[in-house]
Image (cartoon, rainbow, N blue to C red; front, side, top):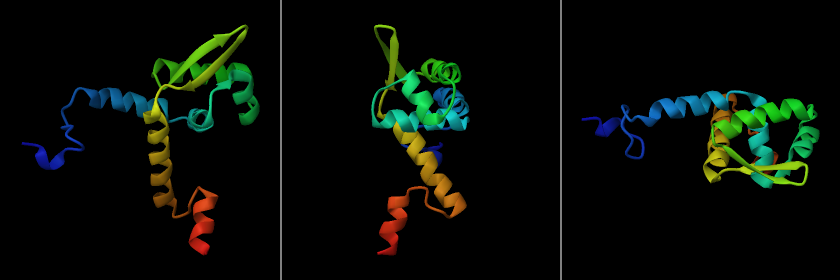
Length: 120
């Protein structure tokens, strides 16, 4: 019935649509998107992330808690430090796809290396 309106076999009435909407809501904050980008490279401590974002560690911890609730990041303790990493590759891919879409919206590439390649 909805075969022509499906994406990868998901029909519009799939129960995960609401969960996906919550996930997009969780990623609607620019700081959380930046955290995902930082964690796409490697595992980082709260203080490292805070330094890279020029934000207070308590602020970063609050954002990480929300990302953890959404199961986008996981963590481990080492002594008195907490290290975060992406829960899986899908979180990185989701943010990457959103950034690619924003490039189409603005008409300007966000990745400088892509812009330089086009100039060659």
